[in-house]
Length: 380
Image (cartoon, rainbow, N blue to C red; front, side, top):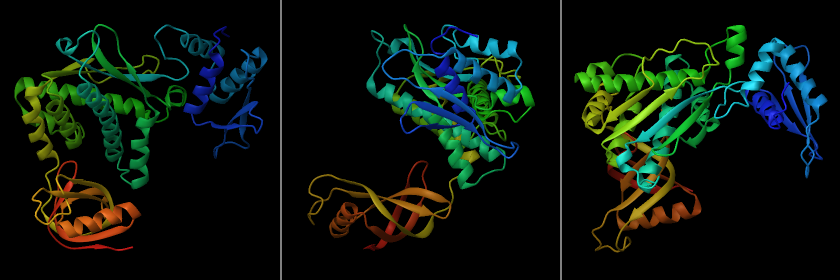
């Protein structure tokens, strides 16, 4: 099939990404990949031999694995050969484990000797992760499968992505979005891979943001099932936090997965001047709920104070963040305490004890605040 020395690793990656369970023998010499599902009479196994300390690839072992893959997925020999050979193409990851790419780039004027400010770089990493995760969660909500388990699954998709630099001469990052179900989609007409749904949503959302700004029409961002409030706020937070005047986001779709791509563009330049429109769109898409009186029970996860926080005459704020399991899900709540309650919060944090406090919940985009508090108590 191929003399590529990385073929075994590519085959292992393909099996793992397509739902085959991996198990290593006790002596760590054999790796077994096993497929079990309701449609099989018995499990299907593929074995690889691991030999440490030397470069080793057993042609017979590789050929047996390829034969099993062809039989299991019904891939003709010629098609499988093409998929394997494309793995060896320079700067290409298509083939047995196809991926879409979401790229990001700051304007060249912010780049000096192939470097940018650390704060901008770290913000780019955080934003790109949030962008992919937010798109995955939006796809779950759109499918009507909004359960805790399905949302956790959507959020975990970002953990399967890979992160890398784009190219020299400019500065940016790219996220490789794996298309786990691509083989099944191509051959059996199975559901569209989540990775492709994510990259398509990102492309359509960025296209809507740039078009809305050019036409000064916020209604283009409030169309159903297109851009979410989270996506608008995350982008606005990034632009405000970094201070960059513009930011480029691109989407490159893997050509090995035959599917119509809805967006007419591949790269989008988002202007910092679009922040007010993004904020307005977020408020229209998801208005903040009314304030409500709540009883918060949880653990202290953050303490923040200046000066001498336990001194009665110190006027600095003493802020405490509690992780609260609310009815709608886990969230962080921040409140201000007096010196005595702050001392109790420190002890609760050190010992991992739960605390309880009542107050008025004021919801914000990232963290809720508790005001008019009373009865702060350590429970454990």
